[in-house]
Length: 155
Image (cartoon, helix red, strand yellow):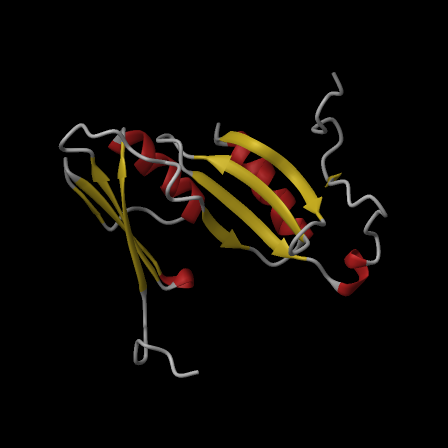
């Protein structure tokens, strides 16, 4: 199939946020790069290693921000160690952890970590499983938690 867009070079995305300052700090920590531009209305991040131009916009009209429609943003990382390192860095940065690092088996099996940004958007950090990791899938496909003590407590 031929792509609709000829020779794309960069992915650009803009989202409206509830608190520009808090969101700027969150995405600076998430991407590991400082903002390229900052005004009272927007913050722009150029993230070369992702070929990403990401813009945070203030909610000028005070409209309700629909964090349900944008299901999540996802960042793929190299492997299990990168997921675990990301978790520890997110905890140290005070990020909201929605789902701690775990292996999920249903659908596309992944190593994953879910965060929530200051506005409420979900951010998934994930790595694809190696063939060796896939052999550890339990028969019941119950998620495997990667950090002891982060498993859900049974009621």
